[in-house]
Amino acid sequence: MKNLNMINSKKYISIKYVIPLLLLVISASCSDRKINFPKTDLSQENLIPKPLNIVSTNSGFALDEFTSIQTPADSQEFTDIGFFLADKINAQTNLNIRVNEESAKTFICIKQSKNKELKSPESYELKITQDSIILNSKTAAGAFRGIQTIRQIIPQISNDTLVKNPIWVIPTGKITDAPQFTYRSSMLDVARHFFSVDDVKKYIDVLSYYKYNTLHLHLSDDQGWRIEIKSWPKLTKIGAKSEVGGESGGFYTQEDFTEIVKYAAARYITIVPEIDMPGHTNAASFSYPFLNGNGKNLEYYEGIEVGFSTFDTRKDSVYNFIDDVIREISSLTPGPYFHIGGDESHVTKKNDYIYFVNRVEKIVQKYGKQMIGWDEVGNADIDTTSISQYWSRNKKNLATAFSKNMKVILSPANKAYLDLKYDTLSKFGLTWAGYIPVDTGYNWSPESYLAKENILGIEAPLWTETVSNIEELEYLAFPRAIGYSELGWTIKENRNWENYKVRLANQKPYLDRMNIKYYPSKLIDWK
Ligand code: TNX
Image (cartoon, rainbow, N blue to C red; front, side, top):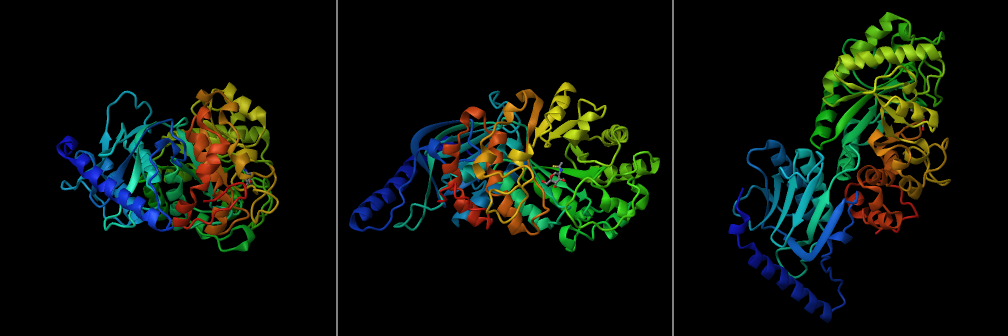
């Protein structure tokens, strides 16, 4: 890495920075043209999620055509992150920032640091002076979170009106940051309605900008089976052909799924696959009728009722099938988790349900994964390494998970469900657990449900009974998913609705640039 002290960039910056400012001030007095004065208070930036600690030094770093990104020569991962940042900056600013360009005059340095203060794997520190931006992190994941902060503090427009070489002034200071929870997730239900690989990638792009680290894919339900299983081809030949409302369905080939996993991994997002069972299994049983345990004849299901299907939990052949499914999906998924669903098995007898979850948990472990299940799974004789996802608002299930020393992912339906309507005017969404306006979605504390050490994190699920294309999906997800990023990352003391809603209003340029069809809630004074 180039020694920054060798470069006399301070002198260079001060001239380059002061001259255009002076010119702007002069021209401001001569005309009523709107002048874009640089903001120099780092603590007033519209960062979401809000960082742990920000100290402003009230000056400016000039990002311009003479800036380069430097990365450690010995790390491909850090270097890839440098290129990722360069691409994003160039797309926004039209600059041609390069990586590891020795002849540049100012630098954004991404460094791997052994600093003990960087405690958690995703923590990072950002030091911005007039001469340089230095991003320190222990891991590549931390560096990736840190570059999202850099992206968010680049102003929308440059201070350039009168000079040839535009500059984007970034406020100076220091940010020290770390997430409060290790699991910060959203879920997409691609079973009720299918969403393409490109739709999923677009969703991942936005999640990663707000420092999410997990995307849970609900890959099977009564209405459809969405992932190719080579040893059981009828799952997709038959089970993938339906969806809610009788539309065409669809599925991911194993290559498609691998493409999603890789795309997410490049953004330090883990994919959690879910095969929901023993209930929510009509599509699987319709494909292979020996799986069926509800004693009824099967057909495609395109409605939105729940709780009528079940696997036959007492047949060994059912577990051979499940073994193949978990083996194939686990081999495509590098992440540590496999989600077995386990919710709303209303027609499975209690003993059968417990027997089923006990047996499937062992299969998940055999393939080296940690099991996650919706909160009902806590009623089985579950291992403390398995994880309960709290959704049902049945506090007994939360207490059971706690008594079994399981870690919990919080998704309380009346607070964190992205598929519930915002209000009575909402075009899409359900209402079974009430409405979730943007402020209700933000104004709750995961920490009030359980002791912090028992919480793995939070997840905002997006069930898709009422939405069938990406625009409709975005209407439900945004802006609420942005608020959940802050609940997962930012400590309680740093969260505040009045302050958040201003920062959220300022996300409009980013959302517009990404062509996100968000719900323009009246609670927010969109900028
Ligand atoms: C409950 S949440 C379900 C889903 C529905 C959702 C609709 C959960 C584990 N099960 O099957 O899609 O409500 O909001």
